[in-house]
Image 1 (cartoon, helix red, strand yellow):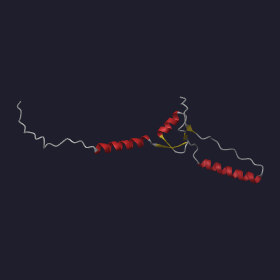
Image 2 (tube, rainbow, N blue to C red):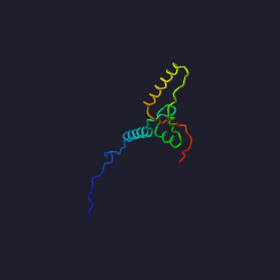
Image 3 (cartoon, helix red, strand yellow):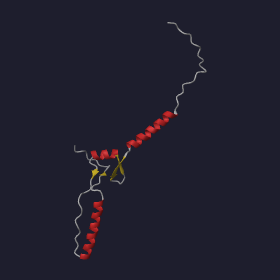
Image 4 (cartoon, rainbow, N blue to C red):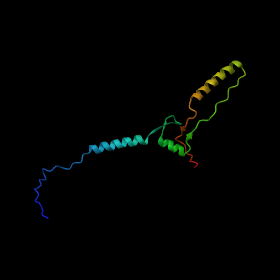
Length: 120
């Protein structure tokens, strides 16, 4: 095996190895934004405070007994001795029941302050 002579290397004319800062910085910022928005995904459930629950809050509420379900059943019809007042009260009661019938059958609310441990 014979060595082939190489031309001399001019170190001053050689291009420098430069690592650029901006592409990596942009990738890190995009990853942080996607990670933050992915970790805070919202659910369609309301919290007891009135906001929208995140997935993390929903998981914690499920494991600590913080899911609140509405009481089933409608109120009994009102009783009044005066026929005029009884008719008005009965009409109000029918309107309330009609609104409840139009609403979803159940609604879950998330109590983010619940501390009871899971029974399982």
